[in-house]
Length: 232
Length: 256
Image 1 (spheres, rainbow over the protein chains, first blue to last red):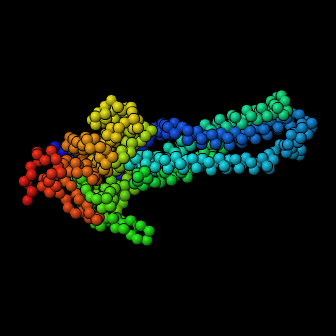
Image 2: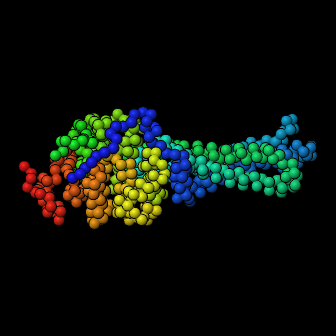
């Protein structure tokens, strides 16, 4: 029998190993993207819940922008008009604020959305126990698993929040047009509208990442042997 | 014949306890074993004998309660997470009963994943991946997803993947357990070919008596202890007819 054993015989120590095991960002993005695409329906449900929550947030914020645009350009008449329409107009500071009720509803909707995301991501992690175990057997580090899950969540977050912010903006414009006519569009402070949409997108991404944090940590910390056993 | 060879796995006095409620179960009760580079070893034993536990220890998937496991003279209980990942990536190739390919990736991507972890660049990895898939007889199927392949083909992909970073050891956990008789034989033949031609050390935990014919040594585990270790020459005498048609070309009378 000709059995020639070859290869390096010593384990590199410390620093050398961190460099020895790597997963390029491009590859992590590719893996995350593929995982999302394979579970398209599931990930679309997560994205859907984000779209709903973020669009509601964007709707409320842009509504405020519309109102403050009217308030600033329409004079005293406008203040009366807005109060009639149900806005909290503060005559002293000359500003419009969310009503307490609105604030609560927004917070609740975001909370419900986060719980939904945690739920969906926990399912996704459970479903992928053995996949995670295999990756670990092949030499993946905890940080790589964490990174893949965070990237997935970031992609879902960007998509959901982007669509949501856009939808919220469009609906609030339509609502403004119906309520105040062309006045609302004419005096629209575009700068603050963009800022509002930015806040909505950031909030959406933040929620998505927050929701995946616990499931992803769970996945990353799992010992490969447990992960492999899960399916038996 | 083994003494002059390099010892690739050294298991010294390994004990493993599992807590089962308030009881402690002693799964391994002190196992000593040496595996030489290039050997083909089968670990046999009934379920619950500690076979899988021992196997996991050797693979760096689990740590012993007591005793030491050396892989290539490195004590794996001393390794941190990074070093263990490195060991799993470069030194050990895993083959599982349930194939465990990553379903979202093609056969080729499955094979190249460990190379990506090892920092090999994309084109080199691709080339080597195709080469390995050809080696296991799947040259033209590298773009298929695991679910589009049969069990035997999936196991071949898994074997190609285990070879990705030219590991010193391949650990095969019941590699034929989910395959029918003839496919199982093909997989065993492939393992034997790899062990002979590439000089890889193969350690397999198995129930499958077909494996015995190709093993250099068979380690029998019973009740958490090594019951006996048999060389292939001795094996044909004690197991007798089970070897089947391959019995013929193995000299039988050399045992003391």
